[in-house]
Amino acid sequence: IIATIGPATEDKIPELLASGVNGVRLNLSHNTHAWHAKIIDKVRTAAKKLDRSVAIMWDLQGPKIRVGEVEGLIEVKAGDEIKFAEVSNGMSPEGVLPIQYNIAPHVKVGDRIMIRDGVITTEVTKVQNGVVTVKAKNAGKFGSNHGVNLPDTIFHGSKLTEKDMEDVRFGLARDIDYIVLSFVHTAEDIDTLRAMIKKRKKKVRIITKIETKPATENLHSIMMASDVVMIARGDLALETSPEQVPIIGRKIIEMGREYKTPVIMATQMLESMTSSPSPTRAEANDVATAVSLGVDAVMLSGETAIGAFAVDAVAMMKRIILSTEQYMRDSGDLTMLSRDLNATDNAQSAVAMAALTLANHVGAQLILAETVSGATAQSISSLRPDAAIIMASPDVQVCNQLAIIWGSKPYKVPRRRYIQARLVKSLVHKGALKSGDYVVSAFGTHAGKTGATDTVRLLVA
Image (cartoon, rainbow, N blue to C red; front, side, top):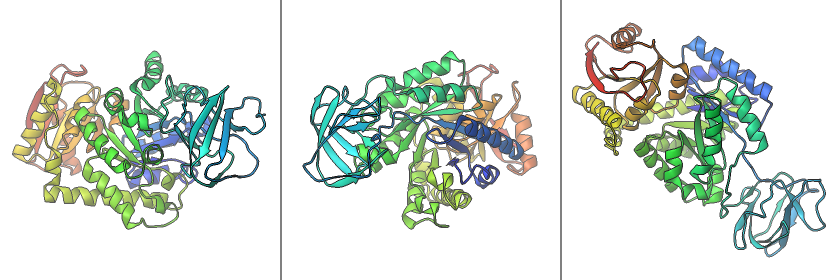
């Protein structure tokens, strides 16, 4: 479970983590760097007290295109002509409305432009001298700062704004685990951010939002270039259509498991709990469906950022997840989800499949994945085993990053060989295992070497 932190929860972080939150999202569209730094410290302090690994996600605003400052609400009728242009000095030519991004080099005649989150649909009829002329397809009203979507337009080049660059530099100097990249169209859009991370010698991973139509047409390459992907259903519905979003989501989830790229489901999962103590039946079903399809994580946005029942929303989401997963185990649906998806495309995947096969054969209670980079753990997780997965790593940041991976329970362990016996003994002492339980261990015989998992061992608690 991932929770967005906002005014409603900045002082409730210990309660959120205790209720089941595994990752927190910091939305850089709001608040100051000082505020976000304070939240990072609060999360780490609370996680340490609970002896938990928690992922911190740094969500960049991206080039969100908005209408500039206009007077009051502008009412349009079907067939009306509207002119837009980027305005740098605060003054726009007569009859031309300001827009906070120069879209003229990118759009062409026939492209759709959606205003106010799709309330008004328009079509480009002319592009000249930086002015974009559109014709309204339906009536509606819009005003200052209302969002603009361009579902038919591909923006080439880096999508990082100056604000994004400042936010990245600040975040990389702090204790974050993931950077969330918005407005991605192609895999190349990820390159600039990846280079910034590499230049500063950080191990921060990238979560790519799938929220534009071009992204849905480049899923293969984006999936391969991303560490994690997020199905951002709000903008995705505007960029495609509401009826396509569930189908696109299913495709992304299946590809995620195939490529071992974790998937987060986001947007309006328990939206009514922003102001109500209980969700609608449709929302409960939405969360259960995401779980049954095999997503790695589900995310709360406004529910925890500004909601009146933030902690209750987390607790409700956890109950839905546990109930659904129990049904999947009892019905055999989880076993169906564990089918081999290109599981032997390399040696590491073959070892993961061997661990799964052994665990299923002996009815193991858990699989212990010793991992330096997290790759072995993710390979095993992608197979969706029935057994619980303990992901043991000597790297604190890797443990935090693994906190949002399906079925994971990260443990920080010493950097030395053969830690299985000590860890199993500890789990027995904590009551997580009982004497005689089987544990399947996957590890590398070359301690501390990334990508060197080569051994599967059966242990008895």
